[in-house]
Image (cartoon, rainbow, N blue to C red):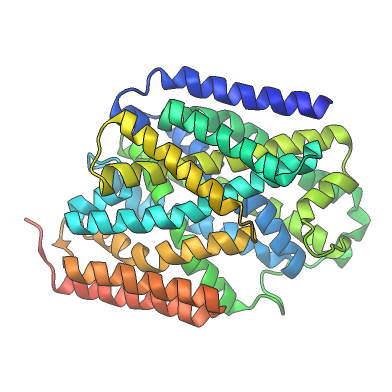
Length: 440
């Protein structure tokens, strides 16, 4: 009964905050980039809350159950990507009066690339949103003892509703609160497992590479996963919400440093499960820890943290996908139209989530589509923004060929094929720079 009450209050407060902040999101730029006047702390908090979602909690811990501490590289590669973004890209991106990554690429390369990239982002991010919906549903169904399909419907409606009401302003405000719950949950679980089983530490192995995870897999994670944190649409959306270049850089760099610490804590939870749990097919490592190894009070706190992690990732992805689809593909600049697109995007993601599947696999498939094809030309176009304009046709070829090979490799279980997609995209992007022209 207490769990029902707490989760109901949490959901109602989230909707109330969405409604309250939504009163100021009537203007298009407020709805899409929160007025582009956020502080460094707001950017830091929102980035952290965004990148710690279903993949970096439930997914990474499940991965740690299988391979041990090297699961660190899922978020560790992201921390490296954020630091590089802060050092190399954030200041450049903030120079341009745009509202999405696709909009930025339209300025740097051309309108055809803008529409092409918006389509790729919309398709890829639907898979990510669906994975986040599914992750939240698993937490709620386990906590309340209800059917997962009912929980999935509830969380999908709640997340979509407050995004529709408040847009990016609502997302950034809720991220600050959700980050507190997220960090509390992660370090609470990690600390309790550490001190409760302190006598077992001599038998634990904290290596970054083992028989189940070799150096080739590190390369894969750094390139396919880490690059999403370097120049992904969600990361760029936070940079565009900053009030100036300095706050953008500072917010991104701080989030990269903090993410490194968080990745160690989450990998440790996965490592503990690797040595102490015996899961049946279909069981989830983190939910098993909550049910069997934590007190009811601690379990409730952690569940709130997990829900916050997933909500804060899902809402950012939903606003990013809807804004990109409405503004860059359909050419709409009216807030009410973007709200309609947000509803439709949330509905499609819900239907995809009904198909279920593994969270990490769903996310990696989406990352492969975008990261392998789009990241190389995006990064190169930003780095060369004052020097050269990339050749449009070659950039489009890079996005599609790289993306198709990335997804093909993921479906075939071939890291070589996936990395080849990114390699081909990089080569075509460099060629696009050579055959482009100088910026005046």
